[in-house]
Length: 162
Image (cartoon, rainbow, N blue to C red; front, side, top):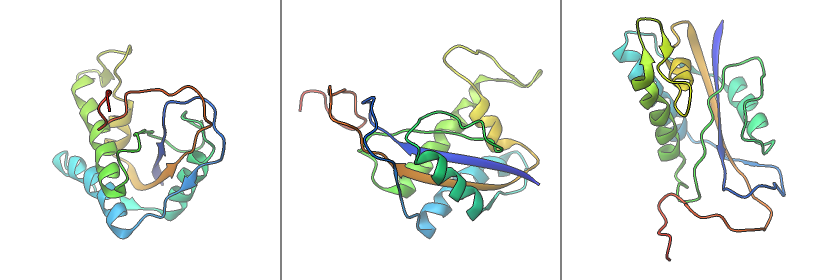
């Protein structure tokens, strides 16, 4: 059985984690948003739709709650996404995350199925979404709190001078 894991981590740009992540309670609407975006691009490519897997979602929540925005090197494929506190609506956050990975399609060299560039842009997230044999997906949204310290700017949706 092929599976795909997506761990979504909600982060700010401070460097020291004070507490473990708080896993968001996903609603049916949130889960549907994850599935809709994944399955829309899969349908365009005539691929079978993905089904939700609660075990994968639990794994994503466990990994996301470790407060490390990095791949776990665990048994599943993973896509990570971060957003500033401007995105509290989980269904919108889910849709934005998947759409950002789908945008990597423009970096694919289809003749060799490789990424055109390996510098700043990649297509690894996109390939996770469209992998033909993948059947299941499980996602989590984790809100992280960060230790006080130097304040970093550049929060999505916030003006720098306010």
